[in-house]
Image 1 (cartoon, rainbow, N blue to C red):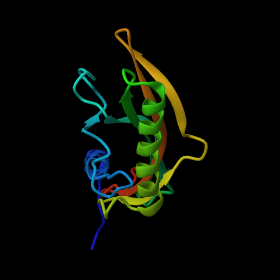
Image 2 (image 1 turned 30 degrees about the horizontal axis):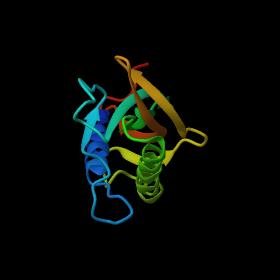
Image 3 (image 1 turned 180 degrees about the vertical axis):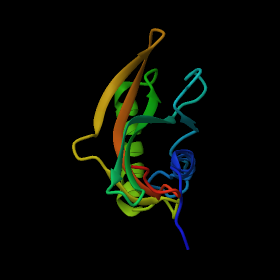
Length: 160
């Protein structure tokens, strides 16, 4: 039985979106996010708190001449909360979101059996707390990078 013969980046994106849509705060009931977006957010006004999943970098490497390809994708998970509440409430909200999503990436090493994926891990040192300005409006954000490794085989082998 042969394995996959093409990348599955869309499948990875879809599974990350599903995982973030299912994330719950520490009470185990409240959804972490009101919305989860892939890369583009048209307007944050009614979307908060939200998660934005952004493909940042990729690396594709051929192993020898057997046609096996190994890829590592760095995907940013950006959590965004409003800045219109008092700063104490805003900070508590971003920390609660952080504490609900980090364990997800410590628990799942294969994105729920997404085809091609053989490893998922948080990139060391990638967590950042920051502010973001969009059209004059400020938001509090938490960012982390998830590294997803996938493997596939080019069915025709390597032409050399």
